[in-house]
Length: 252
Image (tube, rainbow, N blue to C red; front, top):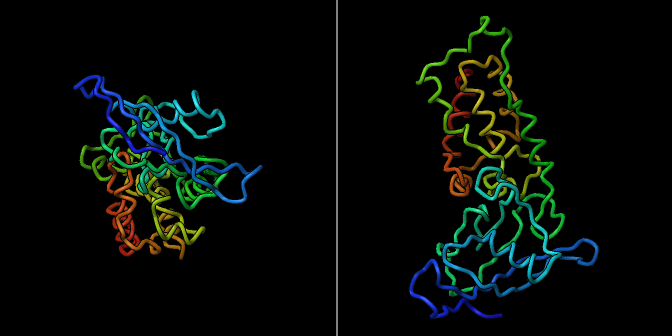
């Protein structure tokens, strides 16, 4: 294992290559009893992403390395993982933003069942998401040829929480979620918030009752881990606080 070294082939950061050491937490359920760390030295550029490094390792060094990715542009959220102890999207984490004088640690997100290498079982996460009824519910259709009208101010109430891409970075950064598999988690609450405060929706009370459960919003300890982890910049902790306030009021 080596630490990152600069090759003096150019002074331009975009064309200067580095040898970067990645320590990846590997796990193959067919052969491993417990996860193990494996190191890889990869030639990188400052503007490369951690996802680029994972591609190089898989394509050039070890084809068995397993991870999820889809759009590779921070939209799908499928490549959420822990990088140097923090939940991030591999496709949005640039090498130049990390300390390359030390090995870069990459592992699966916490709190969800580990399937292989950097891949976890997302079903418990999506089960909580589905439970909060994350879809518009209205008893009547809008007038013929019309949309459900909403003011700019009404939209602004929940605009922030529409940004969620369901990457699970917030939920899997929550210490309560790590220790309590029944807790809905920040992402589910964020997606409930998006409809609770939507003026066009008529089932806010139902969602508030769901989140008033012992495994709902009151399990939140306001550590701000979720807000720090969100790759979309959503103020997750603020959204959870607004849901708590709505429950106490009995209305959004």
